[in-house]
Image 1 (tube, rainbow, N blue to C red):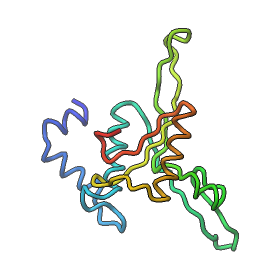
Image 2 (cartoon, rainbow, N blue to C red):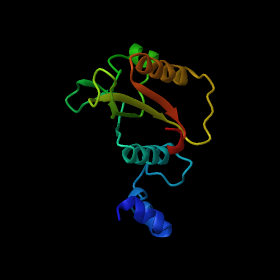
Image 3 (cartoon, rainbow, N blue to C red):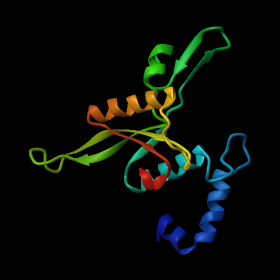
Length: 154
């Protein structure tokens, strides 16, 4: 029996384990299933079950102790670029079999997943538009891009 089979057999114990792992009382940890962080955790778990791998893509900028300035995260080379294209919360790779001339060969397809809380509705804000532009860029280049509100929408 693996962990997923155990969780299906003992849902109350699995819920208690999840609470222990994901709700440790640290600042910023999810406290309800309505929060984006909970969606990210659930989406990453679902992706792993499918054989995909997703990692958190932290994006930001700030001054270091030595006074130098550092930008981090994908597509965050400048303020202007970050305003036009906002990379997704989760970045990863998934195995894809190629056919017919490369039958049996597996490649890694780039994945980009933006997570939103379950009640989110697209409103066309500047942030949402730049996130959509990023997803369109990734999709247009053959990658997998999605904006999701839960594991069932991956």
